[in-house]
Length: 216
Image (tube, rainbow, N blue to C red; front, side, top):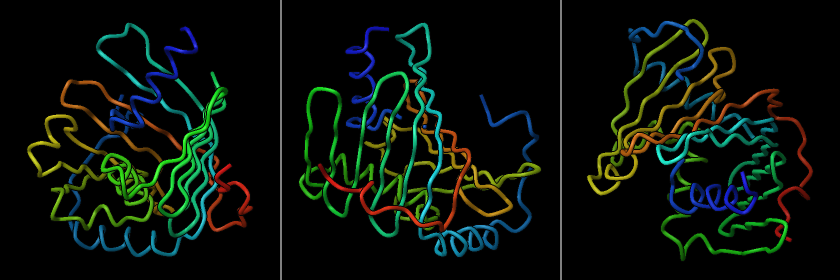
């Protein structure tokens, strides 16, 4: 695929919330005590101060015959610091630092104020809310159901706002039962398109250099 076209689709996902196969082939079962499990996930997530991880992103669109597959490095630092560093197939960088966002490719750098952009406020809410577990408690905006497999808790969030559902049909978050961190995040669109992000090699609560969140 032409690099320019690929970047357009990456940016479309970022700016338009057109986002993250089922996880493996593990059987899913209802959770006996979902309220307690959700409480445990939120409690464990509140103790996560930093995350460093590899990620694989797969984007499937009905208008394209092939998936868009990219990979890179992800960093999180409590409370409001995120870094998505796309390495393959093309370099692309997104940094969220407090209320500012940097978007950088090979040709240009854009700085955006979250407070002036409803789209980026929603992106920040979803990404940080999934990592910190707070999205599971957002009863105002989502209806949450919980299932489980052998190794994961699987939370499905359905937007309550009809206008949001016109674009985004559901968010599915896979939490690792061992440490309650996010293994996978899927965002499905009403059109049938979806993006799936899988995290691997996670380092939890290890020192992360503040320089990785520098907006430059």
